[in-house]
Image (cartoon, rainbow, N blue to C red; front, side, top):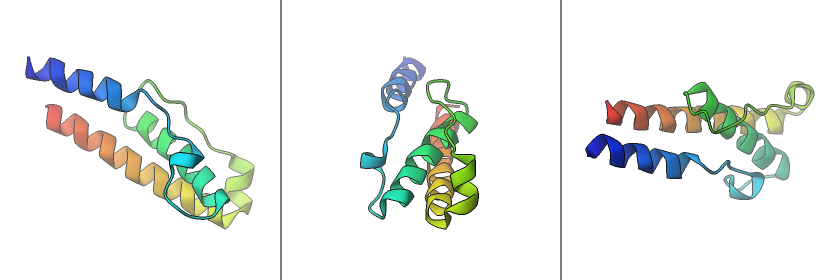
Length: 88
């Protein structure tokens, strides 16, 4: 029963992609980067319900967007991996 409850929790938690309005406070470029990085981090951690999102041209030119993307990727990938480890 416990694995089922954890899987249900993951499905609910992981079913909604983050957008810039849900990202941490900061300039719009940071928030937009964070949202894309977070969604991408969840994909990298194995969540099939997200889409990898990265504006490669902007990432190469906009340091604020890049920092947000990197922060979002690391944070959300780590969080999703931690949930997976807790389920094992």
